[in-house]
Length: 407
Image (cartoon, rainbow, N blue to C red; front, side, top):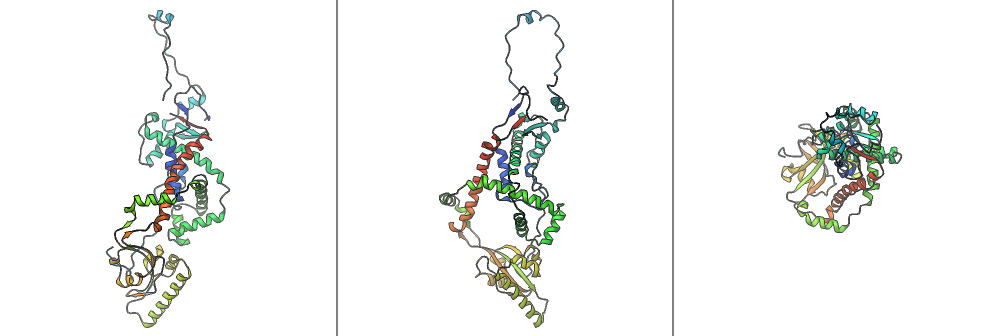
């Protein structure tokens, strides 16, 4: 297919603006680089919508001893009257002319099924009607017409796909800017956030149908996208302290805690029923050793996966959020004086020795600005990134490429 259509073809026009929808779609996937690497479709965002299926990390199982169970066509103008033609009005009209395609390219298009017809292109890279319909359906906005010029939903979807292709071209400039070490660290971060060991991560990766090499390629592309957005848009944004204070004052309710909650994780060194003194001593020593490693700086989640006898070990010892009344009295007594991030001394219960980490502690009242300032700054930066990304795509990228719509 040629890059440019004949200028006489109705409906073909250069698109130089109005692709803001694309930016709004893309930024949701790029801001913060929050992509599920275990989803084989997670990196298809530049051509299709990421699949919704996600390989979830194992769900934490409450510990038996830590908590209680309660928890347009072209316009034509009339020509002046022709006297000769009027004199012949009584003659039979000649046969109606048969429209001939202007080119072999058009002849091919006219014989192409509607769903496969090209409706737009970016630097000659086509966007078909089927792509647009699939895109819209996956966003819950199905298109039930082939007349895209009359459908606002279709036009918006086309613009979104144009924006994606523009960004697809732009990200190629970052192909050589990401090294293997960055890829390794990124994959490690994803695995850690999912509280998975390397073996568990690879097993779930295999179950998702993705090879480790494919994972690395997708991780590299994710980092290239993030680097592009960071350098071209995000780095140019500066959220002032005044903006943060204004937002905080206008959203006090969002920073007001009404109920006390504690977020806990644990390592359980289990004891059998009616343990012998030797068993108690061995379990206590093991618990002390694990705590020493935690205080030394070892990752608590990794320690739980290795040493804990509780089902929560598969989730790095994570137990979740609890109200004080839902926590076992002995456990509560051992953590109430802790600061977030600290690990308790071994706590003896009927189930064994618990090492409990207080991850977060929410206390009723208005959270001080100093504590939520980084959160608000990140949120405002994300909002402004969305706005500036839209302007970047509309004002800069679209001027650097040949963009055409054909409906």
